[in-house]
Length: 408
Image (tube, one colour):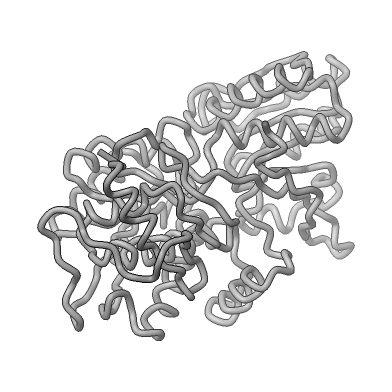
């Protein structure tokens, strides 16, 4: 069971505020919680191994790069400060190429090494392959960016630091309403769980917001490279707002340029990952990227101390600005740190119970949040747009922040 009344009471009394970049806090005392079962706090001097599964090669390698570099930065900081419960942390990183079978293989590899705490994976399709096995093996999963609603359920071992698609679709619809659009279109991938889930949540939220979905077009698979007909339909419907939840490797080279070539010059709005773009987007014709908006896990230009410190440290270590996947990879490690310290143990069952305490508040780069009963954060999101830097390159700027309270 993810959360018992007894453990909830103990953890509410015993959760401590982490002084690191993503701390968990509650209103109780600073004494460590008792661990569940027979697990004992780990001995000082041992190494705590945390698995990381991400797509480090293939079409979505930029997602994996963000997750594992963000996690590596967090571990470097934690180890320099003395580790967790006296242990130095070591990441065991495996590549799943965003493929469900490869993700399951990576999971089994980590379990065979005795690793019971895992971060991963990036995509919902891959992550869904390991949620059942994780529950069976009693291995904790923190997903950095797997947003499908079905990833987390009550009373299991699966958590995430990102919002769910039902929230992300609602955030997009709330922004459309605020921006004054009462008629919209949707172009999505029917063969992808992430894209189709976002389409469903956005459609449902539009109905609640009084927004009419006038036209819906789809592609069969993520390998589709032709989107002219879909956006011609949007032009014919007289629309100037289209929700297009795709990955960056589809948006950059295909959707955006073909939509503009078809005569559609209105808003294209998407979801997390639009900014995780390789060079072919950065070098593209900048004006084509006007009126492109997306919901994201964080904004690198945020002026809060937590974000500015993270961005500066990441740039110093890796020489580039961290994507949202870097932020959630980083946050995943610090959420584990807070939960382990609250549990007083690295035992997966004890860590799971600490994470399941919904009274804990995590102050992270990707937002301040508590987990709901399913293990999903309750939080809003920034809305970001590309901007033309005037030199043929693309920058980004914050448009709006939709809070969780705005979705009620």
